[in-house]
Length: 73
Picture 1 (tube, rainbow, N blue to C red):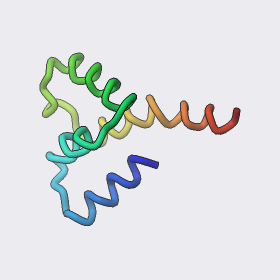
Picture 2: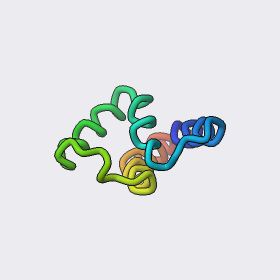
Picture 3: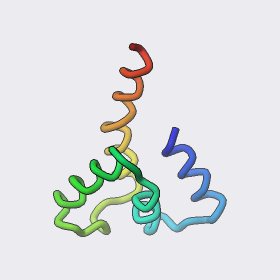
Picture 4: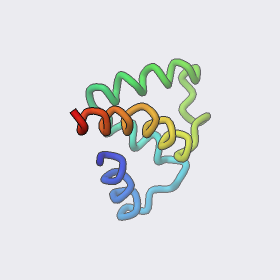
């Protein structure tokens, strides 16, 4: 999964926790970008308000169940 791949990169480059959200957002594409733009607007454009754990939780809530549902079809 995409998030697992991103976390592997973060471990390799020793990405600090306070920069993980910004780095992950850089790698988003298509539906991920659209999702993030909505989330960012809800935060008033201040990405520093969201922690890496919150980002992951929100990402999984949006995309994990959709992937499971798609795989079962």
